[in-house]
View 1: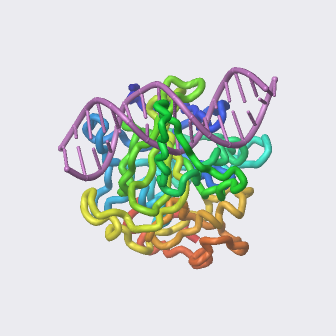
View 2 (view 1 turned 90 degrees about the vertical axis):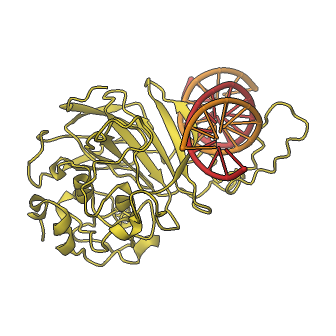
Length: 328
DNA sequence: CGCTTTTGACCGGCGC
DNA sequence: GCGCCGGTCAAAAGCG
């Protein structure tokens, strides 16, 4: 693997083949429609084989994807958590259609090795990957009627009618040597597939907590092997299992959800913003942390705390001062 | 022994 | 209708 900081990253759309040049790193979100961002993730301190990799924690309150997922922090914070420079975060708004996704880079400061980056995403999984039938067998209730078919027949009873509701999802790129980044939750790998046009496979994980249907896909960019693209789908309906370095759920100060308005792309889909709203850190793979500077009106499901304005206070404790320069 | 990973098969959607 | 492809299943293997 190349450890050298790549100058030009290419984001290989997880769901499509188009890859776009990326300078530096970014962070991409994606939701129903999809969009994503990417940030750099310092490779695990000591090349842990690949078992558990702890994202270069920034100590006191260890933050991880989880934090991000749960919406207790914005991706700036998240970036910080991974020793990334916030300035290297970018957000793209997905665009339905083929229109080129709008890339936005937040240059809150520029402490990054990588000047500016331009990432484009277009992971419009809306159509195709829609979930080709997820929801199939609720949970895992396979009737196991193996009958007599020696051939392992996957008798899945998926109702085609119900197009399984599209779970909110988001993806982000991480610069890491390990594929499966530790995020506080427990995941069980349930599949791996070769990715077209890429030598790297895509792994499928499912949250092991009962009744939790959150899934995530992890794949490595073939353009830049040092980049890992993680896509979360669904929301956790439980708290972070207390395991990893302590009680993760306790490490997240509730006020870490300081959004960075300026990071919101002008034309960022409001719907996404909504879905990206912070829920409490009780769970929710799709709680995003930033809110549009102005609108948060049309709320959907997770609108509970959407409207509350972020509290930048605590964030300051967590993130470098530079990130705070952009407060309202 | 229980849980996770591996891996080939299967399923359904989509494009041709 | 057929083939491709992404996603998932589930038995077997691996691991602590």
